[in-house]
Every structure is written in C-alpha cells, then in structure tokens.
Length: 117
Image (cartoon, rainbow, N blue to C red):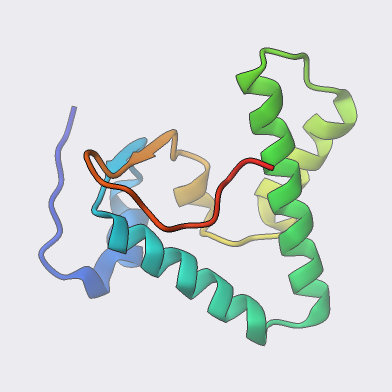
C-alpha cells in the first residue's frame, strides 16, 4: 500500500492522474468541490454533452445497483457501461475513474446529492 498526501489542493486533478488511486479518503468539502466543479462545467456544456453525462451517470448507477444486489449484468448494460467509461461520455479522465474503487470521508457527513435512486 502506498500513502500519498497532497499539500496543494489546486493540483488534485494533476496528482490523481499521476497516482491513480484505487482507494481515496478526503474531507467532505473536497467531494463537495468536485461535485460543484463537475456540475458547473455541465451547465456550460452543449446539450449533447449534458445528455451523454446524464446517460453515463444512469448507466453507472444501474451497474452499481446490479453489483450491490448481486444481480447478473445484462449484455446491453455491460456494453453501455463500457461505452460510457471509454470516452463516449467522459466526466473524469479515464485513468482516474476506472481505477477508483472506494472513496470516503471517515467520521464526516457530506452534503452531496445521494448516489442511489
């Protein structure tokens, strides 16, 4: 296991690409800032990009639901998930979001919108 600490929050995106974490812990305000940044960018994106983003989020949520409930993943969902994650609807750099397995803010409550529907 390798532990990394970041002194300059302005370099988070750059360092995430370099370190490629599989597990990440941060204070709630970090996740709130990421959430706000993503949705600020989404507001200025084209209607097509907004629609692709919403589609990719829905695909990811359904895939997570299947895994959580230990249900089989349909071939169509598997294909959609692969397409969403390989650039058809990118929201984060491919090398960051494909390795991320767990995130957390131990001992703290976040104010982000819920991930589950």
